Amino acid sequence: MSGVVELFRRQSGLASTSQLVALGMTRSELRARLQREWWVVLPHVVAGARTPLDDHQRLVAAMLFAGRGAVIASHSAAAWHGVRAAAVTRMVCVAIPASRCIKGQAFVTVRRTSRPDATAWNRDPLLISSPARAVADAARDVSRERARAVVIEAVQRRLVTIAALRHELHVGPRLGSAALAGALREAERGAWSIPEADLAVLVGRSSLLPPMWLNPLLRAGDLRLPTPDGWFDDVGLAVQVHSRRFHAGDLDWEATVCADGVFAEYGIPVVGVTPRQIAVQGVDVVRRLERAHRAAMGRPRPDVLAVPMTVRS
Image 1 (cartoon, rainbow, N blue to C red):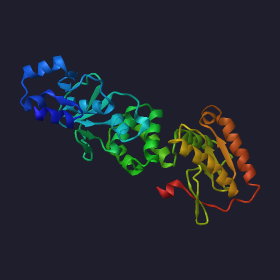
Image 2 (image 1 turned 180 degrees about the horizontal axis):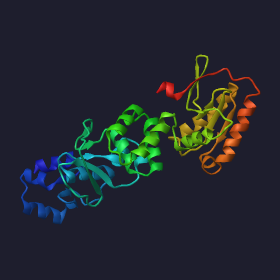
Image 3 (image 1 turned 90 degrees about the vertical axis):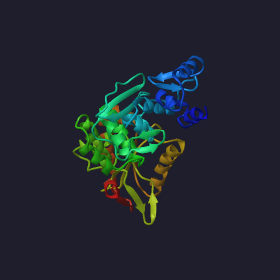
Image 4 (image 1 turned 180 degrees about the vertical axis):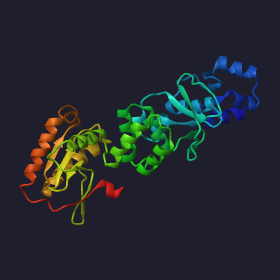
């Protein structure tokens, strides 16, 4: 049956039993196929080949299982949009209208919502929560630490805007909103990673250091300089958090290391720290920054212009 072949092709090798029956397949034909070559991956959802499902097929299968009005949601949607920190589990989260009642099965979790996502992305056969809705829901559903990572990554990679997340915070459910609100505050301060956000907290506890800007824009005349992770504008002191984990790849890592050399060319002192030092040697890190800041006060400020992240966002 050409219709069945086309259906499986369009839906990544998957179909619901109701779709197959609608195409003219009888129940006996369906049973025969299941005995020979097909298999049931979820209730009323079959795969056209007896091979393990890949991640995309799991999403399609979840959509077919959940049926009318279903949307891939929360961490599943955020991961689909490219937020690596949201890929916490292979379970697929699906949202359905509050008027329906379906229990999760196997690798599918189902939530009911009275607030449909009007801007969900249609990528037939998938319907995916919009980036802001997905990130906000994911931040509510995961641990507080994971929520920070999800929100900061999504904002830093420009997958969502702070304004869109702020809207979702106000109109969404209260459950889990504290973690979302806290992560948003850190993103609004300009943090591009969890270590940067933690460093800002440490600096804020010092009675000797002024406020530290996160990821400001630096210029020397008409030339744009690399962006430091932290910046003390009164003395022109840069802080770099060195970690391969929080850079997208080797090229980003090399660019970060090279930035230290560029700062030196323009007379900008740099203090380098690692995520581990921030996490377990916080007091020592702050003391190093206090000493570096005190030393910088004794020499002329570098001739560079800095613009805070908050001004640019």
